[in-house]
Image (cartoon, rainbow, N blue to C red):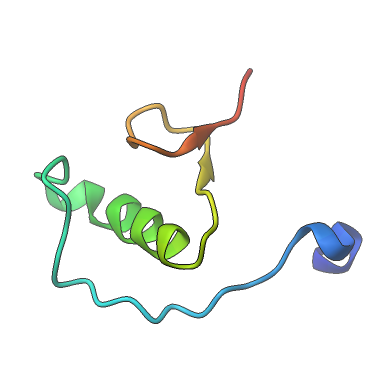
Length: 62
């Protein structure tokens, strides 16, 4: 499946600490969202999601 993505997909290393979370991350259920957003930002990437509750992420349209 990953091979079918060709050059449009790449993995980035998870080199960000999870100690500092943004102010919108107030509950444990949002820690993964916050970490993935910080990880994408640190690597000049954009987090793409279906979740409308993640600030600054690109929400895939229906």
